Image (cartoon, rainbow, N blue to C red; front, side, top):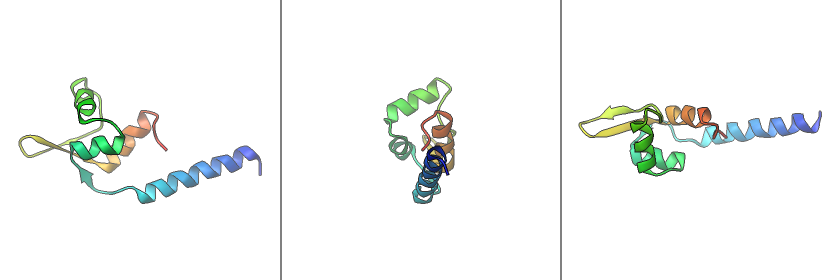
Length: 81
């Protein structure tokens, strides 16, 4: 097995370990911002600009973000593990 193949296996293993440790379900805007490593204001501005992760309305003023959608957004932005 080559060094490149071994390194690729290490990357795949890290992704699997991180996926197993990720929370499931959904979170609010503050939790989504923390999960993505950004501020709530940055996340709000992303949505104003028509970008940002998929979200669902929660009540009259809140938003919910599923962790699966946050993971997909992070991977699409090139920040996936």
